[in-house]
Image (cartoon, rainbow, N blue to C red; front, side, top):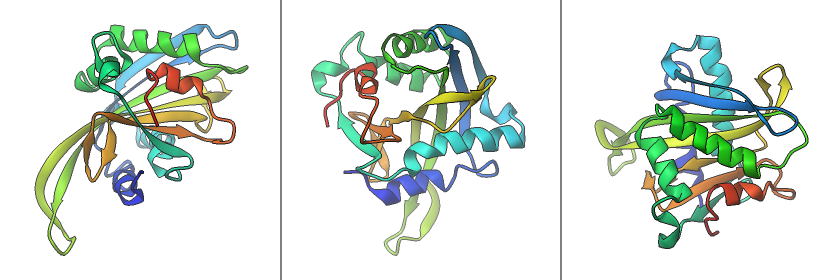
Length: 209
C-alpha cells in the first residue's frame, strides 16, 4: 500500500521556490521507435518557467491516486543481482544521472520494450530530499533525519516539437515508505490503469505487486 501523506510530503516541495531537484535527463523517440536526441542538465540551471514546466511533469507520479494510478511493486532478491535493472536504477540514482553512458543504456531498454504509435519522450529526474524529523505532536523539527535520494521517470507523448504532453506512465525509485527510502520497491504510475503500459514492468525488471 502507498501512503498518500508520504506522497504529498514529496509533492509539496515540487515548486520552483522549494525544489531540491538536482538534475534532469531525457531522450526523444520518433514515431518509428528510433532515438531522436537527448539532454542532461543541472536542474537549477533551468529558468523559473523551465523548472515549473518540468516539475509539473514529475509531480504527476507521486500526486496520482495511490493503489489505482500508483502502485508499489517489490523486487525479489534474485532480481537485484549484477546486470539487473534494479542495479542500473541504483547506479543512476547514486551518480545523480551524471553518467551519460548509463543513461543511454537505460533509454535503449525503454526503446526496445515500450509500445506506442506516436513520438514520445523519456524524462528522468533526480532529487535529494532532507527528510525533517517530526516531533511527537507531528510538528516538524529542523534537523534532518535522512536524505532521500531518488529518481522519478515519466514517459510522455510529444504534443509538439520536443514538447512532452501529460505522462502516460512512469515510476518513482526507490519507493518512499513510512517517510523513508524503500530500495526493495518501486512505485509505478499508469495514467490509465484500465489500459496500462504493462511493458513498463518488463522495462523495470519485472518487480512483483
